[in-house]
Length: 312
Ligand SMILES: [Ca+2]
Ligand SMILES: [Ca+2]
Ligand SMILES: [Ca+2]
Ligand SMILES: [Ca+2]
Image: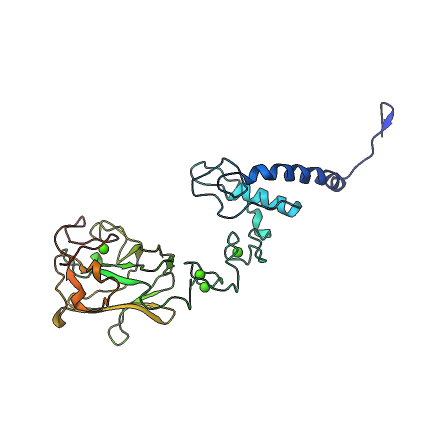
């Protein structure tokens, strides 16, 4: 084709991309140091979402080829998308890529933004399912008895009937987060067995509590803020067992029995004395009926999700 005395060659889009790519990569390499200085160290969107907790927890992104560029774009569209700025490109570009460079692309990696998580990864004590179990089981083989303890049981609410007002509290005395997903909440197999499976994430931080309730509804549980609704599990009013079972291991158990030395918890919860958290919590001498002082909205004396009251 002839324009004003010179010839313009026809050029395909593929060739155009090939010609422009080196320039684009050079430009990206030039801006990368700038990106690396952002406060969240995620290498993305400096200034966007900084300090909101929505940034990537991982290091500066390495942009060395076109593949990385695509990941970069995918990250920009997805990772820094949150409710606060309501910005999300809606793209799902990273399903093609191994964003966390652990060798497993995100269509097989159960968390493609965590290099410690991939199929077959060694399980480490971090409250996460590192090896990508089908049901999300976390820290299997690493949890030992006493890593989670039962600290409070509301089995006999002042409400009548009290069944749906029931709940119990657990505490994590360890220094790592523990996810109770897949744990069984049960009583002894020889009784009329109640059993519930925790089929969602319930992550308890070190030194933190979680509350498991018959129902999440504050209109029907006495006004308690719960972490998990277990539904089918009954806490009998005079004697029963409560067993926390993970991967075939009894992590904690309390066998209360008002006719066998246990306090009668009729005006609130059964309360483990805070000085006995590291002692035997299956010993009735370490428990009391919650003393007067802290009530939940329906009037029961209790401290769900909060430090327990002293018994003495
Ligand atoms: Ca991963
Ligand atoms: Ca883990
Ligand atoms: Ca696992
Ligand atoms: Ca408590």
